[in-house]
Image 1: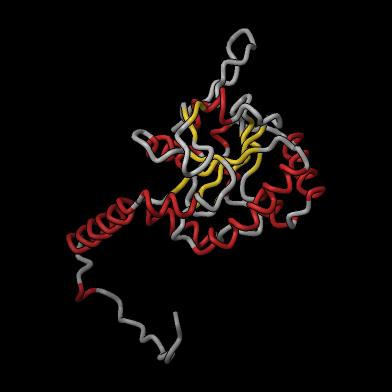
Image 2: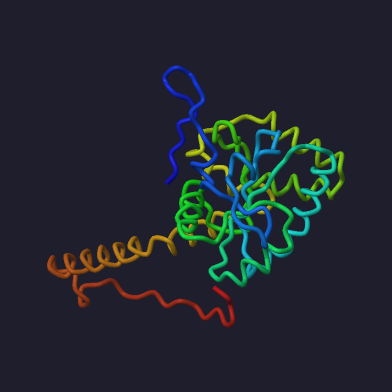
Length: 247
């Protein structure tokens, strides 16, 4: 997990965006990685960056990416100085290049060490589903907005004035420690319901299931040892036939 220390004991800025995104970024799919601060983000005057978690194999991503492209181009036209960094979940280079080739913004390159950078970002921000958009302060590394930023992009409808107003809203929004970002990523209209969150959590933590199964077997064994065997068990209650119910 990424740990951010925006200022030192003398209240001086010690954060560098490189600690989040790595030393180099791609500016386009055909180019070579360039220094993150000195070149890739040199023209970013807004003080914020959007981290876009996406992949070519994800249908919702394919629907959202064109909307984000329209928003990005509108913000650029309005000279908002806003930048996006693509964080790919594609495993293969061919898939990555085909998908990123349609995007006009920066990307973490597919080079040695980039997998660790992307994993750290995803774990720090609690990314459990894509597409995901996180707005970060480039000067302090603080978290600004999560799932609701997707709603903002959709609402802007590719309009230059709306895009500029949205970027301005993000610039003036409250900042939070990056470690708290995971609590605010799954918000907005695209957020998942509690049941889906629970199932996703259990799928990522299978040892909990095994632990519960072991505990159940242990309780069952103790009950048998205490004399609560099958012969002493209460009569079964017949469950009524519910036909083709999906439950």
